[in-house]
Image 1: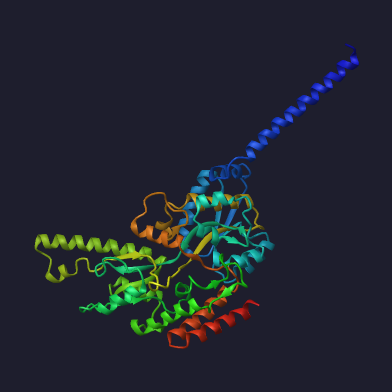
Image 2 (image 1 turned 180 degrees about the vertical axis):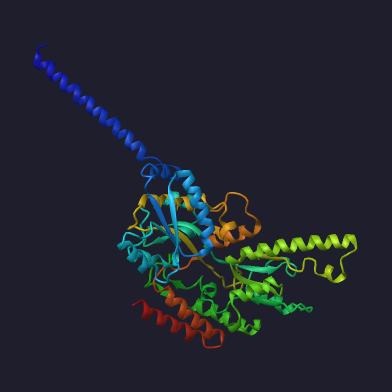
Length: 450
């Protein structure tokens, strides 16, 4: 074989080797990119891109109740990934304006905590990064559908869900064996109830709160589309809405409530002192409810011990188990009219103009997935990701209520709706014409939407 043929064969062999090598590299890259999107894979990939010696994450939060939980989570995160977190409590009134100014000085947060009700403002301000890598299949395996809807705006996913609030029915289990299924059932109980001197009110909620009152309209009104992200989609004066608000109005004659002297706090105070049979309460009342249950058990044990020793007085024994409040689902209105509660999902959002984008995603997902264990104990808030075990009956009800709730709308005009609907609810409660009030609310909102 001459030299030219040998040289040519060597070139062919080298080309084949190179192509085979490229093929192997491509296969390896494809294999890596084909890894399923899950928590472990994401955290491993991101941690390899972070310079833990120099990178520091800045996280803004707006609720002081989150401080202890965030601090313990940041310490845990630093221990596991050697990455430092700088927590900043923001107590201003113009979050996005202040964030924008901070970004211009390269002092903005990498991550910030916010409720889904402000998602349109965040996205339109360019201050919320889409989680484009987050596959819907993984999201729904990890979170509930209501959490997906809450953090989805115009078909794009934003934010790592952390915790939520909604509202439930609290009832005195000493007077009711089971929770009423409807407000109609509550009225039936009221008609038959005889107060034996305990001065108990039967049913209360904050009638001036449009967040809770929307349960009367939630099943039938179109409040900015299915996902609450369509400002032009609004209908609140259809036939069913009129029927529900006429029922709402009828309750004012039964319940003898002075709406000007009732708030969420007064409802909770009545429950604490045992002078309420049923109340609609936001889920932030859970810590108080647990405290009451613990005190009730402790008091019962002491009184029983006193009786056994002969030291307890007759009056003390009469007070054994005087309060036994339990929690249940928001009741429907009647057998024909349903109710639907609102919920707010709070998430960790990535600031696109932060210095440490990768670290922000790491800590956001870490907070969402790995830090729910002590969240309720440190902040009084329930994590969106349900614990796999250890849920008592109270928390099971709250999670079920959340799963069946509607996310509070995330449009900019939400504030206008809450203000204007509060005015309409107030007028309807006072006896004004329901159809007229809803038509006026519809017209006012259409003008604001334009």
